[in-house]
Length: 229
Image 1 (cartoon, rainbow, N blue to C red):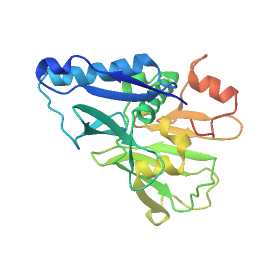
Image 2: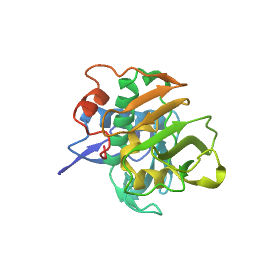
Image 3: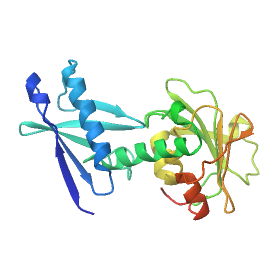
Image 4: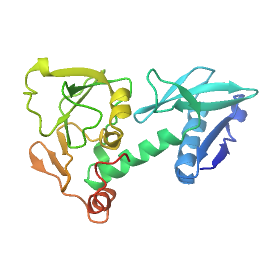
């Protein structure tokens, strides 16, 4: 997949280097323009970026890298732990768009709450990388705890017992089970049950309606809910 390059134009007016944003053709130009505007507006408001700075965007992180006289943006490669950085913004923008579209599919776009990849979550101790039929449940979140639990639907373990749980980073969870990343921005109280038949979404015990024609509606009809998004 070929890469495109977008350069900001308004930062130099504030004696600040411009940004170079590298992205592939799967990312809508409009989303890149929103990101560029965010960077330009923050510079206009007084933020000064330098080599090595981290910028939070949704669940993901950008790292600023000075290359010659311009600032480039790097992102986690979503392939390795610890994090390895690579030039570009595609993975971050794809995940952010996916999280927004999933929240909108359930009528929760105004409550979207993406946890940082630096936060933690709980997983069932018997969960394997091969498991597809998962359950995701979000309880009260805190600064470092995303509030999410990920387990097996057919688990024989009692997940109410803390001995059956282990804590990992949100980043590691996305690496292990890529299909969950888009759902992690759903707000507290949400529960997602992946199944071969039809996914189920609830909040505080009540079913959530999937909007007709939405992303989730299309994925469910195509039986793609258990595949990496």
